[in-house]
Length: 302
View 1 (cartoon, rainbow, N blue to C red):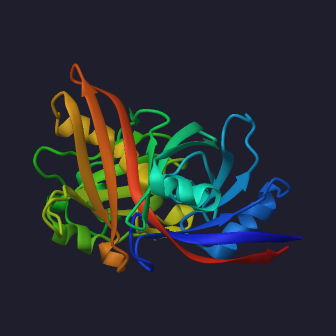
View 2: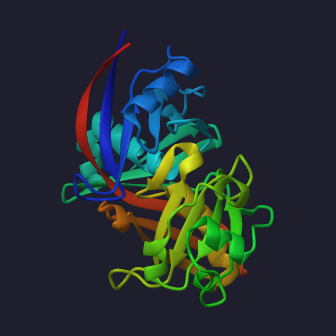
């Protein structure tokens, strides 16, 4: 059995930066063990398997795997898959106008818009569920130990550690400076005891000091228990970060765009756009957007 695959770099306009993604086409006849084995072989943060949609009005179904487990939702696989579908199925159309597609994920149907302008293909998706605050997090001393930092590195401008999910849970750890973000390293001797329950074993560290002007957040994400030592760009975390923004920044009514830079410590700079719509002081909708570029295609023999 032979399956075609594609790789893309996501949340970037430049090849060999951003977050790499593998997408396997025509995967209806693959079982979970085969998909997990292929994801381990690619050894990327996530690998997507495209299947026929359960509801024929939708565009495709996407199964998303890290090297160790399946995820119900993830951001860079959604953006990359939407861009790939747009390029393969409507390359001429997206140069003239935006197109809408719906990708079925375990979290639910995810509505995406794909556009191509000046040879840059971008996608944007509406959050399938708004962020929800999860349980308590460890204290500053424990978090600092798990991240190989000092307790005084934790927190800035009133931001405090918290745990949120918009489909996948993350522990959000605000750090006092970009230097602290750069110094952060998982300490595996205590990591599993500190960073969230077994179903949310990922930490997103961030600060308000950015590499370039016009951006708002500088971040890194660690999920070693998921087989992801560090992720160059984490759309699912930025989706949940909308809850952090509402709690600690309290933006006013209207539309707001937050630009998150990630992956710089890995030499894979990435930019993620988080868009918030606020009415009556409450978050009513949010979306994640970014560019993606094709890198490779080929075949897998099974």
